[in-house]
Image (cartoon, rainbow, N blue to C red; front, side, top):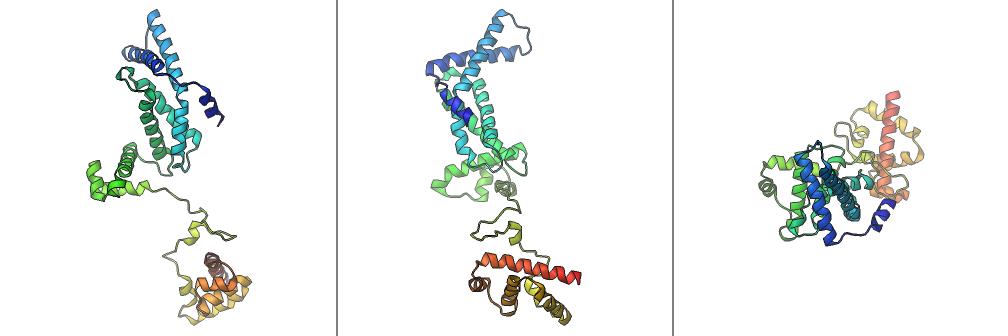
Length: 285
């Protein structure tokens, strides 16, 4: 992005510059906390002016850090754009500038990294989901994920009881959190396949309340079977072949695919369409 290219041209701050600018921001923050609404005298206005300039300088000089962290976390996003993720990371950077204490001796980038990462993780859990979670649940998920990743190399995946003990909550609450850790997938999402006509996820979910193809074509009712056989010739050629091989010659989907020169996924799709056409024609009749 052009924005990141521009941010990369801004020189980084030295340790001495961070110390000077950090002090200016700290004085401004102290003044705003003690006297948030004014009025301000000449000296106070000078403190505010220097503090704002120092804050802007620290933010712009560290935007490349936001960009670097966002590249890592953007791989976990499903709906959140890179620009939105960077915006959330910038909010974390601004918070880091306001909270930074230069007298403690560490570099600002080390301190800001945590705030930027936290802002991005919270944005992913809160805004990158089809189902939005309460803030406390989002915080627990972030905390639980970080803990699982940190302990996994030595101890493997934890049990529900261990997770419950770590978070200080009930076992069933942990189970509910873990359900929300999974991403939501659209039923219209295309299934990865080499077929020319790919199926949607909804096509692969069985209707537990409806009759299966075998139940439709193997009904004990003679009249029903006669009606079904009467509409099969009305189907397209390929659908007729699949119905004949699957339900009358008792071929498996893999065997039908080899015979017709298509994959078993394609056979399943043709079979589903054929059964649907049979149902429609029976309802019309």
